[in-house]
Length: 258
Ligand SMILES: Nc1ncnc2c1ncn2[C@@H]1O[C@H](COP(=O)(O)OP(=O)(O)OP(=O)(O)O)[C@@H](O)[C@H]1O
Image (cartoon, rainbow, N blue to C red; front, top):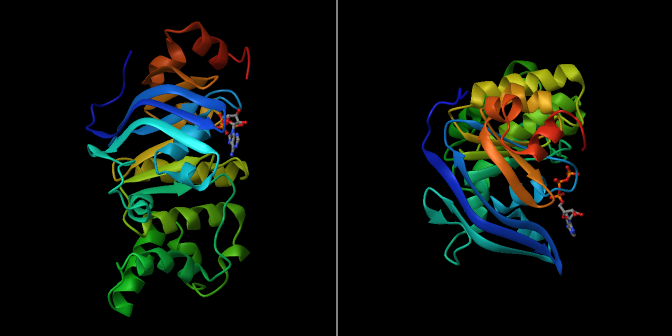
């Protein structure tokens, strides 16, 4: 059974291994990330999901002990090539973290910051329009349009997470990586983020790490199951959840471990 529509490949990883000092956290992971689908990474704690997610925009560069081997491309371009501008890369491949982390600035400034530093904001009117558009796409505009100059940190947790999504969207990314974006949120705020992921699907390639298998089943079309630093199985979400090929996948999705 396959319910996933064909999509061009946005990112491709080949034989990616990651080490923290002498400790190997990921072993030869190869995977294609679709442009038009949502991809979920699932697996028990410590299996390397976040480590792999961070290789996709070189966030591991910020961890001194981390070393990445293998190749990762974005539209065919090697993101680890010495000619790659990492600041640009992180705008093209945005990231949303587990804990909402707005800057201690106004709602407007949280969203305007990226376009300003990337030179995407021409006039004040253009910047206003960019901020409004990003907040609309993140489903937050109506809730904040009358208090754009209030602090971003004064919003509710769910609103803060949508503000962080707006901040990523404002620099016109191609890929959005989400590392357990709902784990700090209540069920209503979680449902709102899941709806938003549906709305954003197709505009951006989206990759989400989640511990919640129902969430993976609800929001994604492709699922990758990781275990002990390896990619065990990757396929359409419906196949992974209803007809997994590997025993380890079956054991995990039926709750036998993890
Ligand atoms: N900064 C780091 N320094 C050293 N080891 C790390 C670091 N980050 C992760 N690790 C180790 O790498 C392995 C994979 O961790 P990672 O956080 O990627 O797993 P995960 O599947 O995302 O786990 P979780 O679901 O608990 O977030 C673990 O053994 C972890 O202890």
